[in-house]
Image (cartoon, rainbow, N blue to C red; front, side, top):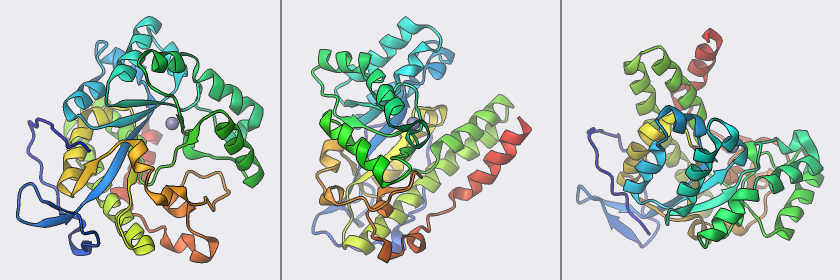
Length: 328
Ligand SMILES: [Zn+2]
């Protein structure tokens, strides 16, 4: 168990989204850090996809701002690596960047394919090649730092176009000592990041800041939604797995998000610990290619999954994303 230790230069105020909703269903309670309020103990593992961001690394004068932030936060993270990104820019420096990530004690390295291909489109043979190519360097760096390479995540969380394709790849993964990694919560941080980058490009710092704060607030709201959904399904909070990306938005706002989650009663655990929760030991009942949360995949068709999919609309970021991308 770890707690966030981040030094803030910005004072932020976050509404307590889960307040009306909160019921203590667990005998384990935590003292709220800044009040006498008792809050339910909740847990989340942070996972970061599309590591390393070599573009941002080069733009920041060969510094990984996200890694520097995590050094202060001391939160365990699992990173899903695309070795294909190492070719961007100065390769030797990029390899060193990857090793910098992997050698950190709080980092668990994982495979996310070499080229970020979409399984349902490329099919079994090409996808296997992409997985194998994706571990060439990572496996040796992991071994060098006494770590295992056991976790795999499908790009786009596309597990295959139908049950036959999905079963075939799950067998390949388990035969090759890989665990297919789920997620329960994601909030299209890549979309917020694209709009954020666009405002910064246009020199509109105020609007960029607005997007950053919206990302933090909407993500905390979405955590409250999924916690409430899981308590409805299982009568308790479950260990959540949050999926986000190695992007500029998280370089600038992940620390605020982590602080906000801590204020909502979350403790940060590693992926191994998260997956000890028995919710992760149940069957996946979803056979389509779309990258939906495992909270929905576990539901049986008779549970009318679509009626449960009522996530917050993320402050309308999708419309802003399309508008900004059209203008580009
Ligand atoms: Zn990805």
